[in-house]
Image (tube, rainbow, N blue to C red; front, side, top):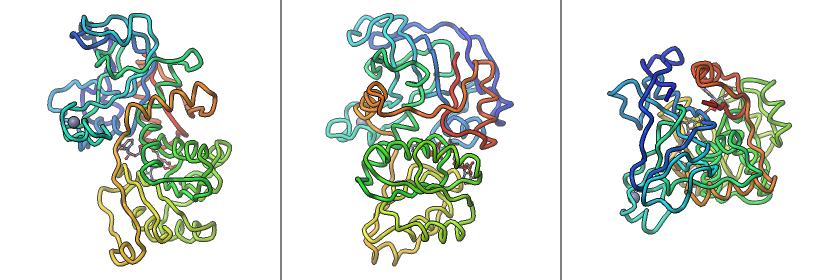
Length: 337
Ligand SMILES: NC(=O)c1ccc[n+]([C@@H]2O[C@H](COP(=O)([O-])OP(=O)(O)OC[C@H]3O[C@@H](n4cnc5c(N)ncnc54)[C@H](OP(=O)(O)O)[C@@H]3O)[C@@H](O)[C@H]2O)c1
Ligand SMILES: [Zn+2]
């Protein structure tokens, strides 16, 4: 079987198609014929040699977390899915033993890691992590959900977003950004988001963004958002200067959920403003498998329609990463092996 592997960690030019032996399932595993695998900034970090989570000493490395497709074969102990089932993978890998695996939420597992290997024709996965897809949810749409939408959903819940809240999302046009707008809209919250591109913001407004701010300079963003309102919640996947701006803008008792560091891994924050303002900063990674199940259900009922910018063949995987690196996309980029 073929895979789009990272053969050199030099960005999109480092992707090569390689031939690998077709995997065999272990007793609790399934082999999935990958119909679609969406890419995330997480994969691009690895491809650029800048991953905080993945050991890439052994190249080539096959990345890709967000697998959807059809079960080909299953191991002897598997009774939750069968060959022919259409499925999406929850990419969480957990120990099953620690206090968070026992008491929840599972994404806090002390040994938390994530599946990699979806950018290939077939993937060998933990069968208990597969969610069956209803007829109304196609494979490409399902592949958009696991990382971006699951992370956004968990952050919005951690930050207790409710009807009427104003949610501030710096960098609103990517996977997590668009997902946050759509999912905040579903609970009746209002959103304000930023981008360097007015054109991309126009697309976001069609997807439900209430207020668009075309700016990247923190001071410019601050005064533009102040003119709109006082955020109750900030969804922060950029880090860097955006953390300080977000906290300054937050109302007293407001919440900031943080899942990323695209702009910078370090941020300066005003400590007195934090404690005098009773503000909360919440670190958050991925979400739980039941939350992903709920997202699949929302797609099935027509309440959620994940935004997909483009689909690519396996051979075009490098081009998909180039689109992410060039910041041309709105929403998800999906490889269809
Ligand atoms: N902890 C977790 O579980 C988790 C899960 C998912 C994602 N993440 C993290 O969240 C972040 C977003 O992931 P994603 O997959 O949604 O990425 P993405 O699709 O590439 O995000 C694109 C967005 O980021 C903005 N952006 C890109 N580079 C920027 C820069 N240098 N300065 C300011 N803004 C910039 C873009 O702004 P423009 O509109 O101006 O182009 C766009 O709005 C990443 O850091 C990722 O690692 C973490
Ligand atoms: Zn655990």
